[in-house]
Every structure is written in C-alpha cells, then in structure tokens.
Amino acid sequence: MKESSSGAKFSLVLIALAALCSCAVAQEDAADYWTKKGDGLTLNNSFQEALAAYENAIQIDPENETTWLSKALVHQILSKQANKEALNLAEKKLENNSQDARAWQARGAALAGLGREDEAIQSFENATEIYNLEILNDPENATAWWFKAENLGNLGKQQEALPAYEKVIELNGSRKVDAWFAKASIFMTLGRHNESLAAYEEVIEQDPKYVLAWMGKGYLLTALGRDSEAEDAFAKASELGYEVQPALSLAITNVTSVGEDEFIEMANDGNETQSFENLILTIDENESVVLPDFILEPGQRIRVHLGEGESNETDIFLNSDLALDDVAGNLILKDSAGGLEKFAAYWTPGCDPGQDQGAGV
Image 1 (spheres, rainbow, N blue to C red):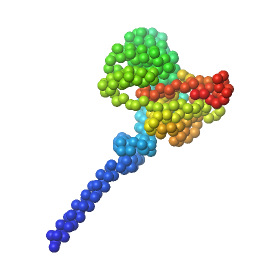
Image 2 (tube, rainbow, N blue to C red):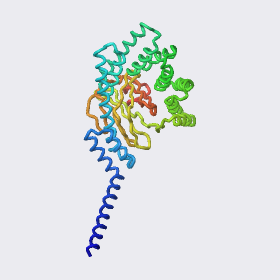
Image 3 (cartoon, rainbow, N blue to C red):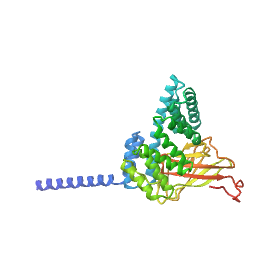
Image 4 (spheres, one colour):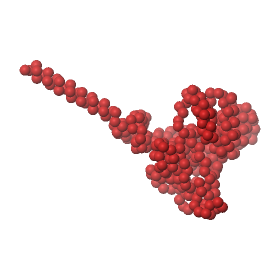
C-alpha cells in the first residue's frame, strides 16, 4: 500500500509540474504576458530588454496599438538619453574651442532631437558661419562646402543647400557621391522628379552598391506610377542587404493657418495600422521640424499643433515658435527612409481666387 501511495503522489507531482509547464508556455505565447513584462522592464530602466519584450508581444498581436505606443515610448526615452549625451560631449568640445564647427553642428542635432528648436537653429547657424569663413579662406575646401550644405539642410534651406552640394561635386570632393544623393533627395522633396531621378542614377553609376540610392529611386518611381521599374530598384536594394519597408500612407487633410491655434491635420489613408517615425515637416521650404512618433489606425486622424499644449493620442503639440503663412504657403512631409513624400499647398480663406470658403490643402 505504501508503494502504491508513493506512486500516486509521484504521479500527482508530475501532473502538477506538467500543468505548471503548460501554463508557463501558454503565458509566453500570450501577447499580454510580453506587454506586461515589457512594462516592468521599462519601469526598471531596462530599456533594451523592454524593447525585446514588446517586440515579442507585437509578433503575437500586431494589431495592439497600446503595445506599439509602449515600444515607441521606449524608443523616445533611449533617443532622449542619447541626445543628452551627445549634447554634453558637443558642449565640452565647444568649451575648449568655440570655433569647432562640427561641434556646433552636433550640438544643433542633439538639441533638435530634444525638441529645443530655437537653440538648435542657432547652433546650425553658428556652424554655417564658421564654414563660410573656412570657404572664404579656401574656396576649394570641399569638406567645408559639404558641411555648409548639411547645415543649410538642417535649417530647412534646401534651395540654398543645392549650390553647396554642387560645389562639392565640382571640386571632386571625397563626399562627391553623397552630394549627388543629397541633390536627388532635395529634388524629390521639391517635386522636381526628373532631376531627382537623374541624380539617383548618377549615384548608382558611380557606386552601384549605394543601397540608399536604389531605395530612393524605387520610392520615386513608385510616386511616378512606374511600378515595374520601382520593383526592380527595390529588388536591387534587397539584393544588397536592405530590408525594403512598405511605403507609408499618410494624407494631409486640413491646415488651419490663422488664429492662435495653427495646426496641420493628417490621416492614415491606408488599409492597415501604421507607425510613423522620424517624420520631417518642412513649412514653406524654410523651417523644418522632426515630429514625435505616432501610430494611426486606418482612417484615423491626428492634428499637429505648432503652438503650446499637452499632446495626446489625437493631438500633438510642438510647443514651438513655428508659424504658417497668413496668406498661403506649402508643406512638405517626408520620412528619413524615403518611404513617404507628401507635398501640400495651403491658403487662408478668401485669399485664393478659386475658393469661396475654407482652407485649401
């Protein structure tokens, strides 16, 4: 009887262990388990581990917008930490040498990443002034021309950046191919598609393995409706090791450029939930700002307010000094990967002869 009792107890233990194991497996297969794990890791400042947990949750349940937002929040925290460290390093260099143009440029990029736009602009302008002095002393300094162009781009002065990039090409500088790529990107932003395509092809001719040129060419050809050629370009990018992301679908649906609350309304006009990251908004081809990341379900809208306020799921407040033109202007919205490129004109009601009322987009 004792042996039988022991055997029964042993069997019960095995059953209990099996139940625990199946419960653990079930837990690990549940998106909610990984989301909660990610939340806990975030609270403990274990951000990389939190990202891995959120990614596991998304693999199980890719339609859970809360998990996507949690992942975006961690990315924002890591980005803020990195920008603070970059700012600290740049300012230490400037303490030792206030004429260090690269340090001013790095300071500007870090400040922009932290949302301190006015200080960022001043830093980029300081860098540009120093590069202008270097060019004055040595007009054939291709490196100075390159960084001048980069800083003008950071200031949203795309048209002014073009001649500087062209000078890099003319001087046969070490960044010559990169200058061609920058020209292609600017032409694409300005809607000068034929010139953009020619520039992308020049990059590819000089460096057939320049994967971003293949990507840019693919996105441009897609915008031009030349889908077959676009697929060939994307295939080449994939062959070179680049993971081609599906093009983003975002529409500018409304612009309010008068009154105290100036805003730009956007909508996901695609068929799937999309995450929008590192979008760059350029106003009147003059001022640019990187928008905070956000997620939109199909048909969902979000408003980007230029002034002050507290951001939420439907409204982003930039708390900036940016302003729309009181009469008319244009907007350019793009992402750093080239998967999104939108252009929209706007005007104040009554200022466009073709409109009786309402704002134009």
